[in-house]
Each structure stands twice: as structure tokens, then as C-alpha cells.
Length: 634
Ligand code: AGP
Image (cartoon, rainbow, N blue to C red; front, side, top):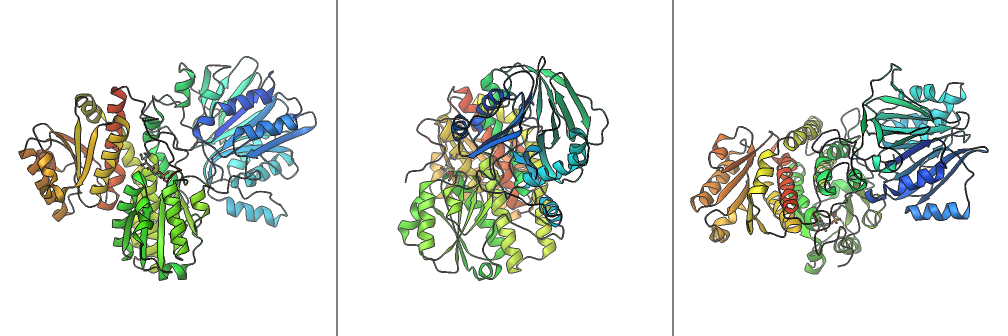
């Protein structure tokens, strides 16, 4: 699999955005294609990638150059070995998820005879079946990506005499999953063809030239006239024409529009901050982290769980190790994994872990959670764990990073690069990966029946739509931010899995708005923190679902306690929870979900609140003072 694309040019808060973050560009026209493509890829560097490539249709056939690492590596290659001139080509920056960031796995990929070049964003779910079918027909492959399988398929279609457009149509008919494909063919001069399913692609309409890109930033310097491709549409570009049809061949209705963003806004898909863009990418990030995790007979399959089931069955203790937001995800994971597997779970701050002389045996599993996969504290912790012969599983968003490389097994989140320093989609997709790990262990240990596991997975699969619901009902949250600009202290309370949500809400607020914010276990109030309550003090309260009477009623009592002392209560609870709403100065309703999964929803208004209050204060939300996105020093 390669990766994905940036949000389509939709208005903030729309569910039209997609989480994939690789960059695609295609060009046909009068300019030097290499110049257009490389500059277009540069416009997309901001989103993070780990390899880059270009393919040009030249008089000597298709010429491809691709290098792992940053674009500068590709540019050095092009300086050392210049490409022949061309006015037709495609380019790609890859954010690896399936298949490491190597030269071979970089895009573009060629068919067997080198006649067709293809770039791809997304996940081809049935690529293994297709690859086996092609291998039986003596096809050979140079990479371990799903994209190369598509390139071989496409080339076989054009070799049968079809036009590149018809060949693309036939090819997409064989594919399952989410994908954007862009291809060129030596024998189709002045033509670029693309197909879009679930990963947006935009046409840049020029004069005597046309562009394709996953991000309008790539062609905005040449044209501001664009057409966003719709779901299951195919486009054929020539220098003078743009022809859009549906996968079934019927002419498609297009939606031309004028891009009036400046370049900076274009890079953020129209949002003011990467953080805000990433907040709204979360439904798709969660959906794509779930994609392909459960097979046809309802069995969970995980990316690279390279620990055999016998060893997994012998695990008698789990220690989760992480920092910051990732640590909060680990705290939530504890409740879920212990409930499903009955294995005791400890959760440790990575910088504390190895100094407390932890008790680790060969039957201990250490789980690290890290968005960047480079956090020094976490890396040092797993090195210590491995010296003690523990099995290490990492949950990571960055393919090929140091931490997954040094782990025995890895579960990748498919959130795409997270640019904002304050983690948002990194957190919610970490939760999904933790739930999947817990259910997988329950499946292996037999502590949950197959149907019980499938039922939980179905609940997880229902989360993106519920996240969208929350993200489309933010007026009260945004009004709170405006109303609380002068506050100096904000408290957050929660119980059970709501307690780590309280910690995360406090972290979000303090790290980007520099306000004093603290999260507490609500039951701890009477042991000290309630002394902080004074008239008008804002207290966010995360209330467990009503089904958990014990927890729910105690939480409502806590709300009454702080309210009785003058606190301003902002209550996050299930829609219809009248008892909780009764004691709320502001009620932020949440869709109904199982208790263990409520953090995925409850954290959203807290992210939005923090982003908005920091914005109103005029702070740099994406690059807060004193902070780095990845803390690579201990
Ligand atoms: C969260 O908003 C912060 N950016 C920070 O706490 C972060 O979660 C922590 O540094 C861990 O980073 P990692 O997930 O890349 O290991």
C-alpha cells in the first residue's frame, strides 16, 4: 500500500476530507513536465513523506526516478542523471504504511514491460489475491507494495489493445479498498488518466495544459481553476481537454470552482491550522485505521504482529509505555485490554519506566505507543524491556521509524502525517489500535468468543460517523472558547476511561493556550483538588454512559459537589442524559457508544475548544512555544 492524499477542497468541518497524506501530481501541456512535477511535489512536502518519485513519458519511452527519504535525494539523482525532456508525467510523495520507505517501494511503479507508470494513494484491500493471480501468470514484482500489482494489471489491459482510459476503467473494476490512481502510457501521448475512490483528487484546468493533484497547492501557481473529482470517477487529461466519466463509463457531472485561497491556506486544505485540519480528519483517520483489519470470516488480522500465537498466549503481564498524549491513550487501553483479556496491564510514563527497575520476564509484553516513533524516552524504555527479554509491540503512525524497527511487532495507525504539535488524530487512532490489540489478544487467548469480538469491531466501525456528528455540532464549544478567553485556570474531571480523557483535555489546553489546566480522577476531588473550586471556575466533566449506573451516578454527584461551590460546569455526556444535563451550565452532548469507546468522541470537543481558544488568543496553534513535534532527546 502506499498512502493517501490530502483533504479535498472542502469547507472546514466537512466530512469530505480524507486522512491520507501522500502527494500526487500529474501534468500534460507545453511546459517542461519535470519542472512542474518537482515544484508540485515541493508544495506538498509540508505534510511529511518518506520517499518521492517522478515518471516522464519521453521519446525513448517512460523514464522513472524514485528515491527514499526527502525530495532533495530525488533532486540530487536528477542532477546526476538528468531525465530526457518531456511534457507529460506524474509524480508522488509517499507516506509509507504497508511496505517500508525504500527506493523500490517508492512510486511511480511500472508494469512488467515498463510501458505504463502509475502512482497510487490509498489501500487496495484485495491486492494479495490479485498478486497471487498475476504470479500464477508468471508476473514478477520488484516491490512489496499493492501499487505495483495495480501497475501490472493496468499494463496488461493496455497491452490487450485498450486505450489507457478503458484500461483504467477495467482495472478499477478489479480493485477493492480506497484508492486514487494516476497513470501514463508510452503509447498514449499527451494523455494522463486518473481514477478516484475515497481519496480525493483535483484537476487544475489550464490554457493548453492540465494538471492533476491531491492538493491544489501543487498547481495554484499555474491555474486557480479547478475541478474536484467525485467518488468513483475517472478523468482523462490532454493539453486541451478534461473528460470526466463514472467508473461505469457514463459522463459525469463536474463541479468547477475557482481557488481563492493563498498558498499557505491551500497547504492546510482551507483550514487556518494543521491542528484544526487534523481534528476534522479524525473520522477518516479512524476509518482507515480499521480498514482491512477483519477478514471475511470475522477474524482480526493485525499489520505485522510477528509474535506467534503460542507466545501471545503465554503473556501474563502487559506494560504500556508512552509519553504525553500517547500515555493518555495507554491509560485508556488498560481498561479495555484488562476487560477483554483478563491480563493485568500497567501503564508507565516512558521517562519513569526504566528507572523504577520494573519487573519484566519473558512472558511480559511491553506495548509502546508513539505517533512519531522517534520519542527518545519511549525508545530507551523499549531497549531496556528487550534487554530483559520482554516481547515488544509498538503502536506507531510512522512506517519505518526507529521504535517500530526495534520492536518485535507493530500495529500501524493510518492517520497520515500529523503536522500540528498538539496530537489529535494521532491520539484517536492510537485508541483504535489499542482496542484492536486488546481484541486480538482476546481472540488469541480465547477470552472472548468470535461473535463478541466481531460485535466490538462493528461498534468501532460505527465510530467515524459518530465522530462526524460531534464535529458537525460545535457551536456551543466554539462559544465557550470565546466566553472563556480571560480564564486562567480550567479543570477537567472524569471517571474510568473518562479520567484519561480529562488528562488529555488538560494537556491540549495547556500546550497550545498556555493556560493552567489540570485533569483529575473525579473521585479524587474530595482528597484535595476540591479546594481549588471557587466561584465561576470552569470545570469540564466527562460523564460515563448511563448504562454504567455506579460510575454515572457518582459522576453526577461530583458535578453537584463542584457546582455547589460555584464552579461553572461544562458537561460532556450522552445525548439524552437528562440527569447530567440538569447540572450543566453548558451541556455538550455525545452520541451513544459503549463506555470503553466513549473517549474517541469525548476528546473531540476538548480538542476543538483548545484549538479555538489558542486561536482567539493569537497564539501559533501548530507550533506552540517551547514544544517540538517529536521529542528525540531524553
Ligand atoms: C501531545 O499533544 C504532545 N504533542 C506530546 O505529548 C506527544 O504526545 C508526546 O511527545 C509523545 O509523542 P509520540 O507519540 O510521537 O511518541
